[in-house]
Amino acid sequence: MSPNENLHYAIGQLAYAIANSDGKVQNEEREKFHKIVEAELRCRGFEFNVSDIIFKIMDKEKTSTQDAYMWSMNQIRLNSHYLSPELKETFVKVIEKIAKAYPPVTAEENAIIQKFKTEIADIHGDPVYYEKRK
Image (tube, rainbow, N blue to C red):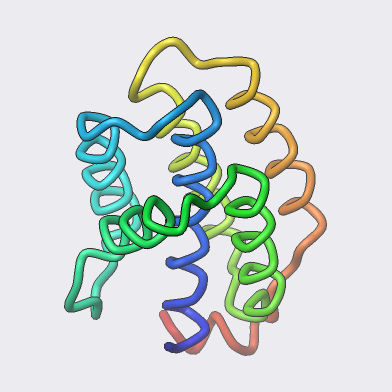
């Protein structure tokens, strides 16, 4: 996968972490999350449903919330050179919408969102890379 695809995969992992933080991921949640990820990220170039694939794999492997979050942040850091300020804003918007998609927003979900906002604020992409993609 390309660095840009890896960043989109990472937000899918983060979506899973939020969905899983308040218990088992319900089918209704999964559908809402897919629509949010698709609408907000407009994953052009993907010939597959990235959010659905991520959720299926993580469900099958019984991935913990903590592991999903950690894997997501690792991918974001590894591919940070493509992380534009606009993409960072979009990622924050996506996870906030995901948390609100299946009320109520729990303390666990809020904790993940705040942790993500803090950690991603310190990550800066390289304009030489992400400007080429425009």
